[in-house]
Length: 349
Image 1: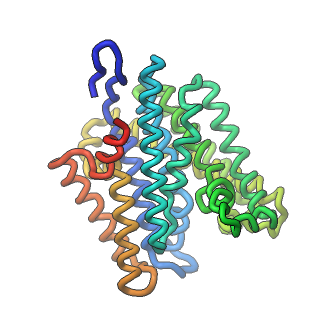
Image 2 (image 1 turned 120 degrees about the vertical axis):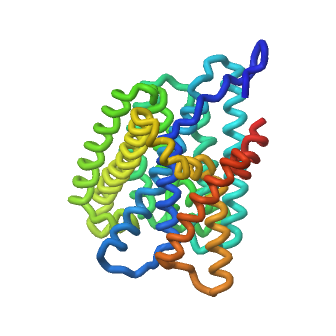
């Protein structure tokens, strides 16, 4: 949207193909997490399911932060920032309402859109802070808040609050599968990284290498204190302090995996433009995450209603993944922005 004469929001930056591809990887990971068969004790399928369940949501949060940073990074005037805040707030409201409606259907998957929208609202007051301060807050949050949330979730008094009429607030903030204590600092980290300029390939490459190193250190150190399964379920069998530290290290490692993946894709598609063109179908899927995620949840809900049990098969995973990419590529080539993305943009205006 061009800026109006004498004022208006700054023109949007061109889409960064690598970020869209990374977002598509996160969406496909969620397809695996939602539609893969359960019950495998070992083997590649079990490993893939664990990796998708733990890392795809955090990669999704990382790319959400990168997208938010790209949206707001060009705003320097107060009026521009206010308009952008309004757009982000409207998008957050749409996500909250849509997530709540999908949850009311009782689908066979855990819906993340409501927490996603709330996280946008919580990030809004901080999104235009100086880059260094954003980085400090984000890194401190990633290292401290997940462990604190895991520790609080083991307290009986906190767990009992979920039974209260307003217990959904506790679940959103601390005890849920996607607590805001994790989402918010990861969003801030994505915003801060975009402020470091994703067009500088060498800098992006160094950041990706640093994130990969942090991923190895965090995941290895976290595994020494508690297994990934214990962290995922919040088991305090080895002690609450140990669980808290292990959770923060594991989350930091998984966030670093997502950040390294996204930055590597940004660097590769910048250095090799032809790669970006080859990955255009994936980029198209990553450009309409709200539409594809919502369609995925509705389809799985419909299948569960028809069959009477949660759907789960690798054939279904393949169909959902391929169908999402083909649909997105065709829709984008013919009609441009996705339908729910159009709605979000219209609300923002």
